[in-house]
Amino acid sequence: MESSLGIQMDEPRAFSPLPDRLQADGSLKKHEQNSKLPGVKKDIEKLYEAVPQLGNVFKIKDKIGEGTFSSVYLATAQLQVGLEEKIALKHLIPTSHPVRIAAELQCLTVAGGQDNVMGVKYCFRKNDHVVIAMPYLEHESFLDILNSLSFQEVREYMFNLFKALKRIHQFGIVHRDVKPSNFLYNRRLKKYALVDFGLAQGTRDTKIELLRFVQSEVQQGSCSQNTSRVITGNKIPLSGPAAPKELDQQPTTKTSVKRPYTNTQIQIKQGKDGKDGSVGLSVQRSVFGERNFNIHSSISHESPAVKLIKQSKTVDVLSRKLAAKKKAVSTKVMNSGVTKKSTGPCPASQTCDCYATDKVCSICLSRRQQVAPRAGTPGFRAPEVLTKCPDQTTAIDMWSAGVIFLSLLSGRYPFYKASDDLTALAQIMTIRGSRETIQAAKTFGKSILCSKEVPAQDLRNLCEKLRGTETNAPQVTSDTQGSAHDPAVPEKTEHKASHLRQTPQAQHSGNSVYKAHRNGCGSCCDSNATSLEGWDRVPDEAYDLLDKLLDLNPASRITAEAALLHPFFKDMSL
Ligand code: ADP
Ligand code: MG
Ligand code: ZN
Image (cartoon, rainbow, N blue to C red; front, side):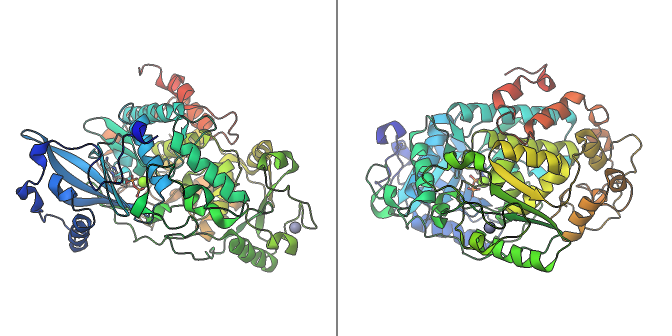
C-alpha cells in the first residue's frame, strides 16, 4: 500500500525528493512578508516552525484558505531552473486522523492530475503536521462572478464539473463535499479543479484502497462500541509520532446546537443503537465556517464557529418546541420498515406510541442517534444524506452538483442556507415539493411526516424569477435589504414561513423572499450586456438536466457520465 501510494510519511522530508539544487538554499529561507493580514504572517511563521523542511523548498507568500480542517497557503518554489512555480500548501490540522490524511492523499495521487481533478506534487510531514503540496490554481470567488457569467460559461462550468465527477466516480470515490469552494475555477484560463478529498468515502467497489478503510471505519463506528479499533495498526502508511487523537476525540468544539425556532418543524426519529462514535470521519463542516483569503474574493466571512450537532439534543429541543407550538408545520423522518435489513448489525427499529404522529415519545428520545455518513455542507446535502440513509452512493455528489447548477441558473448563492439537516430538508421540500420528497424517501427506506403540504415548483419559473430574466417579471431592485449574498432559501423563520404559506403566485408578486437581491447592485449595473448573454433564451435542456440532478431519488438520479451526454451539452466534446 505504501509503495503504491508513494508516500513516505515517517521521514521529515518530501516524499518525492526535490532536486539537490533546491536543498538548503539560504535565500529561500528568508521568507517574504507580503501578507496582507497580520495574523497571516504569524501563521506562516508557525508553519515554517512546525514543518521546517518547507523552508528549504518554498517561499510561503500568503494564506489563501482556511477551513475547519486545514489552512491553505500560496507558496512559490523553484522546481526547474529559472522557473518559479506557484504551489498550494495545504496544512492539515494536526488532529486529522492518519487514515483520513492518507485517504485524501491517495485520492489525489490515484485519481487526481487529470480531468479537472487536482493532483498532488509532494507531501511533507513532521510529527503530527502534514502539508500537501499541490499545483496552485488561481481561481475566482463563486459569489463574485456568479452574476456576470454568461450562459455559455455556465454550460462550460457544469460540463467541466461533470468531467471531474465522472473521473472520481470511476474510481469509486464519493467526494461528499461538492460545492463551489471545492471546485476551483479560473475564468480567464478556463481551468477547473476539483479539490478537497478530506471527507471523501469509497463506494463498495472503490479502487482507492484507503477509502475502503475509511468506510469500514465509519460503518463499524456507527454500530459497534469499538470505534477506534481499526486505526491503531501499522497497516496504514502513516504511523509514529503522528499518532492521532482517538477517533471520537473531536478537534471541533462539541456544542449542542440550539436551532432557531422555525415554522417548519422537522424531527428525525432515530434508528436504535446508532452511536456518536464515528463523527471523527463524518463531522460536518459548515459552509459558514470557511474563510477564503483568495485574492479574488471580496467577501469576508465570519470566523469559523465549529458546531458538532448532537442530534439527541436537537431532537430534544425540537420536541419541546413542538409541544409548545402546536400550529407549527412539523416534519419527521424515521426509518420505515423497508430498510431494516440494510442497517446491518444495527438492530431494527421498533415502532412505538409515537410512530406516525408528530410527537416524539420518551422511548424515542432515549434512543441513540442513528449514524450514517453525513459529511458535507447542509445546503448541498442530498435528501438521502439529510435523512441519514445508510446506503449512500456517488449520487450524492450529483445532487450537490445540481445545487450548484441551481445557483448558476438562478443567480443566488448559497441557494439553500441551512445550518442543520432538518432545515435543509424543509428547504428542499419548498422547491421540489413535500409529497414528492416523502415519496422519494420511501424508496430509500425513510418515512417523513410533514404536517403541511408544499407544492413542487417549476424550475424554469423559479430560476427566471430569481434571476429577473422572466419576460413579464417585475425587475429585481436594489431596494431590498440584506447582504448581497442572501440565499434564495434563507433559514430565517419569517422567510421560510412565507415560503410555506404563500402560493407560488403570491411568492412571485409581493414582498416574498424571492425579491431578495441578486448579487451585485441589481438595477443600476451596466453588466446587463454581459450578464444577459444567453440568459434570455435558456433552453429547456438546462432545466431538464437540473431536474435530473435534483432527482429526489438517488437510484434514478443522473450520473456524471450520463450528464456529460445530456443534450444540454450537445455541441461540447470531452
Ligand atoms: P478544506 O478541507 O479546509 O476545505 P480545501 O482543500 O478545500 O481545504 O482548500 C481550502 C481552500 O484553499 C479552497 O477552497 C481554495 O480556495 C484553496 N485551495 C485549495 N487547494 C488549492 C489549489 N491547489 N490551488 C489554489 N487554491 C487552492
Ligand atoms: Mg474545502
Ligand atoms: Zn416513539
